[in-house]
Image (tube, rainbow, N blue to C red):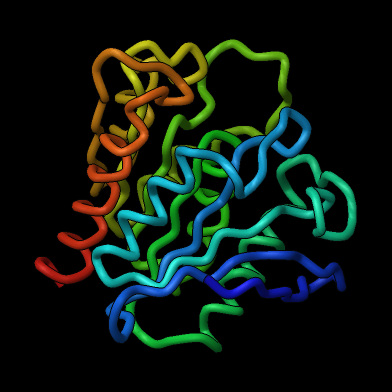
Length: 217
């Protein structure tokens, strides 16, 4: 693991970690964390499980802290400025390795990842975990309009626990239906934080990334 720093388009310095596979990277992955104002950072068992699974499958994985979190400079940007953070992470991966790029986000990070991917053709597959759709006191930017989602033809995976109060499965399936190439996986017996089921979610994500970027590519 390499500790790194990189710079956003608006001049902030973000901290991150590069996790390398056992051999030459087959692909690259950027992973976005949950809400900065509710304890979210790159350091969480769900995100650890995802990056471990991706590196096991040959991905060079970058986890990082959004602006204002731990050693990253700046302050919380309401979910909009954080798009610049995700773009900067993708830019950094351009300097690190070649190969297809996979973007993954959990909760708040899923909201940022979706809105980043819609405008960045470098993202070739997308995984959105616990996408915030349920009742919550946390204010986030709205889901992009249906026409934009319908125009997004790259593969998208949605993952949620069947007891996730922030991402109810019926609402999630409704959102996924707006995309032309979306898959929904609901993990039974778990909630938003996937307690003791982190690896189950990670395996779904890793298998999806490998299939869409290599087996179908």
